[in-house]
Image: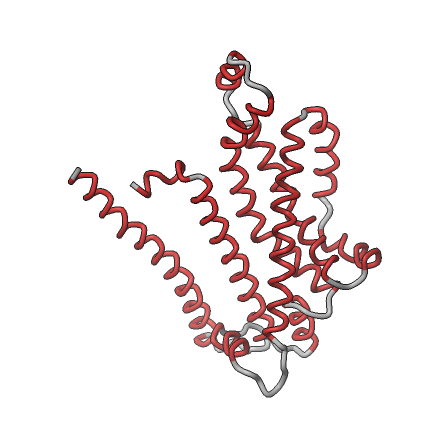
Amino acid sequence: MKAAITVKNKKKPRRLSQRLQSIGAVFLFFLVWEAVVRIANINEAFISTPSSAIAHLLFAQPDANYHWQKNISVTLYDFVLGFLFTAVGGTLIGILIGWSKTIQKAVMPLFVMFNSIPMVAIAPILLIWMGYGLKTNILIAFLASFFPMVINTSAGLASVEDDLLDLVRYLNGSKWQTFWKIRLPSALPYIFSGLKICTTLSVMGVIVGELIASDSGLGYVIVNAQLMMDTPPMFASLIMMSLLGWGMFLIVSIVERLAMPWAFKDEIQ
């Protein structure tokens, strides 16, 4: 009993140390970036320092007002909705493909072909069809990120060992019971891996939509800052995009731990 408590107490500082290392790596990256730009005396019109970019985020600037609160809120709203549509729609499509090999053979080539088209090339067409606004940005985010979700989900459903499936059939288990009790739990690690990939792809999709088909959002800020050769707001927008993706990644990781406690039992014990 004492040994188990000792091991548990040792693991807590180790997990804390790993988290601090991750945060420290991010701060180190920004410090190196700041130092390189200042030591090399690089013109701010080419590369902004992180401090200047963050200052543009936090404090009103006399040269331009980018309405950060409004534009960040718009991008966050588009991103969350696009991610949720991807998470639900991509998972359901992946389950449908994993459920039937006939559907998989019929639909998968179309998905592969469609996924090969860059979103930057498709966005202008969607703009003509749907116009500016929320629906276009969400659709672009969905199209940019749903394919990994579909692939991971279907691969997870197909990853069950044949011996286990044979045992379920021997016990007269129905197809629904096999899916719910065997295939879906086995697919959860794949599904959450797909969700983590989609956290970044959804942000990218939303920004592509805002660059081409929006009058607000961080992508819109980048376009306007580019026209005025104002580099710090562009880097400030990039920092905010990375924070949005990072935040959603952490949320997915927390949900993963709640949905799959058995996969992290060694960390908990």
